[in-house]
Length: 188
Image (cartoon, rainbow, N blue to C red; front, side, top):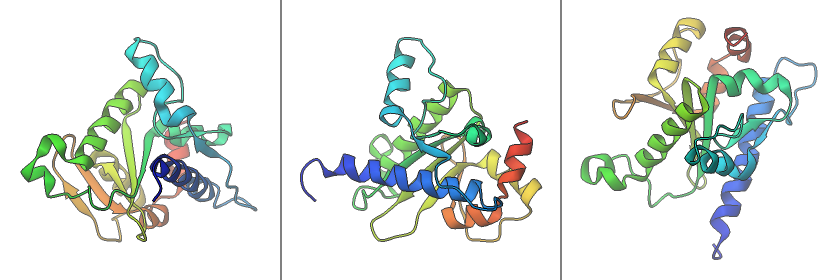
């Protein structure tokens, strides 16, 4: 990859995830839409900068925000971060060897901090390695809450008890398991 291409890759991935989230969110529409969610300003950088100044910035935290008000319940429910690539740098076992530099957990901690700043109670980190399907990291409390509503999770999962326990599942399984209507109803 040419120098500087990482930012472009991340931006493209965020746009792709916004489209996927939009299509999932509107799956019951006569014509599903891909324009409900989109990247936040500077991928949340504006909110991060303003938070350092003790100022709030509504709906600019995380990588994904809503562009149509019908997407507001999902963004009210959870902060969404996206990461693409990093295949050599992301290893879950780093937690045991060098916790301070374990990239995956640094991302998760950052997402949790932004979740709190945004006033949301749930967090999702979507991660894709090159040429692999996306996985999502969600806080365990959200997973358990959804299990009561959506039934037992049908796919494989990894549970990690670290810095606010989390569950890792395939994004496509998340989309199949959770009916967006249940989140919409919860947030009314």
